[in-house]
Length: 507
Image (cartoon, rainbow, N blue to C red; front, side, top):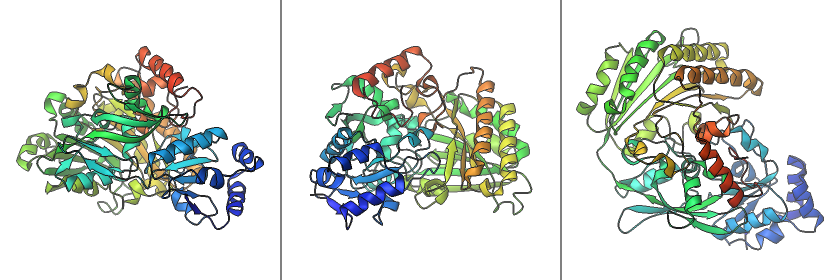
């Protein structure tokens, strides 16, 4: 029987209802003389746990990385095997209780806040990785974070495409496409999937692959949050190649236009090798300028290259000619060490700390517009000067990716719609005062409008893993009419009652 995390079932359930507000679904459970422990708990595996708000562990088990428009839980079910997921889904369906699968940090989108007083299906106890005998793929459990995968595979002289932050869960990243350091060589995270095990909305379990449920396999790779709970993957892995070199440069704000002219030359695929990632961001750095809040934000840029420093020099030289105020070089970096070097490891509160209000407003592009980038810089600079409390927990990111292996995958073969975009831009706000939300959101929408208007297409490409939640379906899932039409048809087939309608829902 499941481990019951409570000294008193009735007291804990009553506390849950008092703390979070009585939901009709849980009221229905009580009225019928049943409860989550005696009915669901009796069905779960011995290592599973049910945690209610009265339990001291609930605060940790139910903590969210994103405080804005967050979901709320009346129970956390820590599943231990795939069958636990199926039984939890069936229990929730029986009593019309909403549920949400959780596997790591992040989860920006505001639509998650529509899930109230539901069940969190936590994968914290399902973290196994097994590399195949031929070394070509690994079986991944659903609770794995990027950090788990990176460290475990590296110990076996392997690596694979993951997201760029160690605390995020691999399943959520993959379901939205999944950008990463290695995408120029191997494609998106979604392109690494050979087979997925999926629990559907009715609690049944199916396999999705090119041979089995190929329509579901298509949808999972780019729009997968809408179709099921992925409980396991067969995922491509690779022999680790050479070590990495990273050069960081910092420029003052007066270099914005010149910088992005140079960056445009680098973003062209013929000038951008598959082993190079070029990231930039606007931020404030008191360690660089002690009077940072009374002066100007800086433009920070990283050249992240899998190879020797001598090979990187020709790509860096045009930027060095602009006169950075700081330049640092790190060589012979292992793949796992890239993440803490770039402050994307689990111990960095800016990227992995829980409880901040956070927003992204992503825009995918093929080129920079220097005049638009000046406007973006000015907006970021002004807002962070006006509100010092957000200055050192906020940034504006410009992720420049290699796309060779991404664009080699046919556009129509997955639900991910924006393979040609090699630049991903967004503000990344972090703050603690919710009274600032309206102004921060308004400035973010203005930033988004500026970038889209300057792109020449007037069509927003919003990476769904970064989406704010106000984007249209074509803006997240592709502007070709056939894409949204196909997704809606598959939604009716695999989730006719909208049980997976909390993350960028296809409705």
